Image (tube, rainbow, N blue to C red):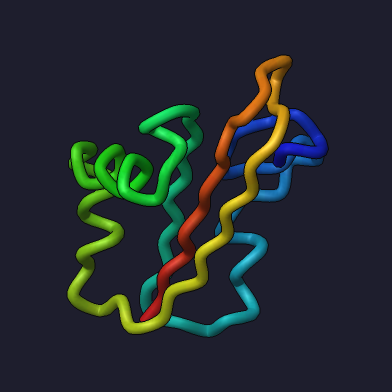
Length: 92
């Protein structure tokens, strides 16, 4: 996302999150994303953003979520420096 300059669950070519994970054959999959700088660019800041959002909180705390993959990268993004982008993908 940072390299291609977008922030969305669907990539610029139109592929959705669910199309990307269809091969997993899991009962439940979900993805949360966030970006920020300063205090909102730290791990604690990003998690606090997710937990303050009912939709993101629901995905993170889903009872069936047993697997998680987390990605964080910090650098320039959309003309700003020091931006952290984070994604967490969860599945059953």
